[in-house]
Length: 134
Image (tube, rainbow, N blue to C red; front, side, top):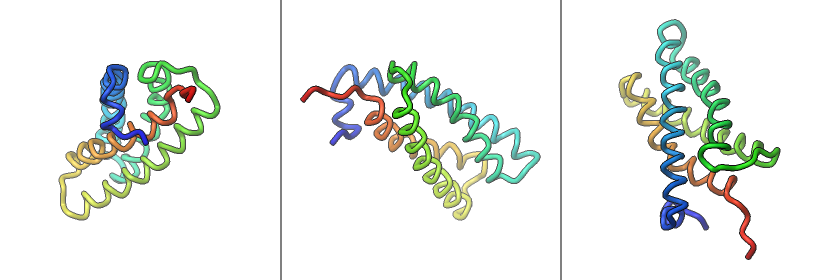
């Protein structure tokens, strides 16, 4: 089983995680920027979801080429979509929880993104890693 701990024991895993974090910061900035602007005009949950979807499209491209140095394939795309479906539900649930306990609506997305990042890296590593010849 590949966990964050086992992945980060290799230099390649560490470099991949650094690229993942950089890509995640880039994608999160897009997500948060869209959320921040749109929530001024529409409901916060809707603006949060729209920001997520736009950043998702950009994130697939950068994850494939930059983070994992992979070649796109239908199998990877489907896996990426599935992992982001799980990630989206995690975001929605965590964001709702933050709103329920009174966390500021400008801070809540940052908390949610931080928690979801570790889960997402583990899932994507499994999807994009080359198959070993064991």
